[in-house]
Length: 404
Image (cartoon, rainbow, N blue to C red; front, side):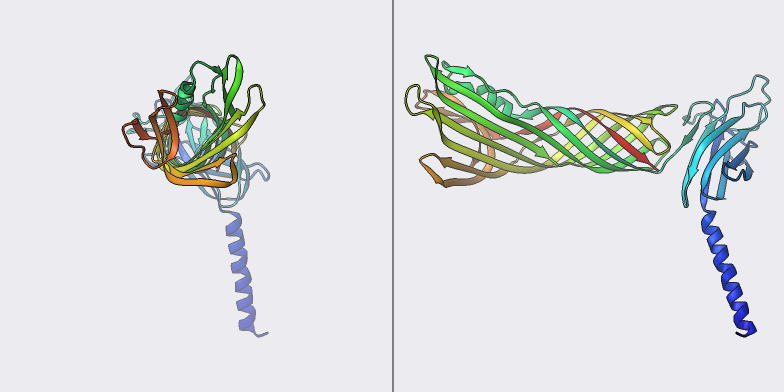
């Protein structure tokens, strides 16, 4: 190997070593320091100590923002101390850094009893404080949250239909239908902090309401004659665009207001079994089964509060409590009817979900129906409207947030 080749090899090795060292020293800590009145402080001594090696790096806050930066730190655990004349020293400990990570600290220093004014920079007295006095706030940029909970929903026309179903035979009702109100919630969100107090997010939710085995029995002289058994499911998978604004921070607890815009992918399914006795006191047999399934898309909104409690440096437990407004109409699908007299054949019709009142000549009274099909018309029909499936209500949700 010639001299030129040796020099080229040595230069390449030195370059690789420099690059490796640069990659090992690429973690960062930066932020700003204020006094108790919100004035930014220049001249504060900030020292970062690597806990494993006791290596120290020191800077002085400067500029109109009282800012400091450590731009080339080795990964590891650090404690950062803040010292200024006339102020109580403060130490932020347990800061874990990995390669390429940045941590933003916002620190407030308390004045000592014998206050000697450190140079306070004007122009920030009206700024909103981002932490309590003597406390550092690590401002993570991204978040991932996973949660679940319960809701109390309005449900929509299905509950009106249930409450009026007894009119089919008002004199012989043994038991009534129960309303559908409770349901479950699941969500997954990605968040991005765009300002110190404002976080925007996008996510996907799952909302489910189900009333199974809901039945009403009609009788004559106390003897059951007919029974209707209903199974109703209402589901939606909303795409969620959300925003949270930080209102309060104390220690490891934060509270934010939150609002969300929802785009629903919803479905409604109702199955009705009609049973009847062919003879007096005979056991009731299934006479018909009607299954109606319809889907729709639509907008909704939510508004409420969001609280978090820190479990460690990255993981936090959250609780959401909010009100949701999401009444949806325009459901379309199909209605499938199967009769006992011909169980192998089904009558299938398509159309829109309608809620309306019709006159039943055999019963001699006006009855309500919720069904999929063509729009009901004619002299024996009134109060026709598109069926409403309402996901509005109060929601309680809890889960974990991972912030980094």
